[in-house]
Image (cartoon, rainbow, N blue to C red; front, side, top):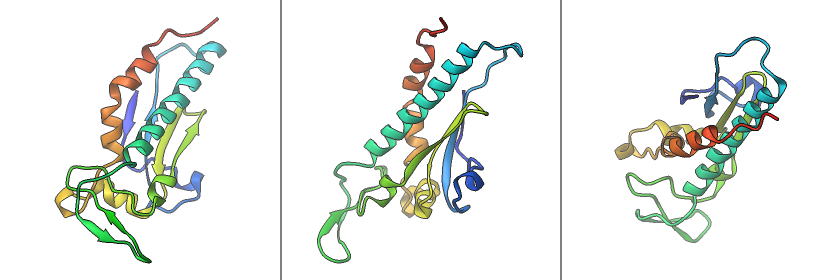
Length: 157
């Protein structure tokens, strides 16, 4: 299983711009060319479950109170920004609502990402300069859960 944190190259399939970002999770195995249909189906199911697991964890990490400074929202109200080292604060909820999975059964892979331009900026910018890594950090924290998912007994009957 590999994690590719660069742009997953799915822009044309998703119809989004190059400013979008995603993380591609791929499972590969060395098997003979006559892999059983049941094994193939199980791999596809686990790949989809992996994507959903990461998707739900990312959405959960983008929810909740933060400990940064207080700011006024345009149009009224206030919100608390995230401090250095925290996940991005939810001001409008736009980033959280635009996180998606793109499942590719042909390649036995799933991509988790967003088409929101500032999602990539938050992910890649150095934290003291305003960056708040959220995707890679979540995936890294979930490696044991993902490994446990793939180590469960295989249902091939």
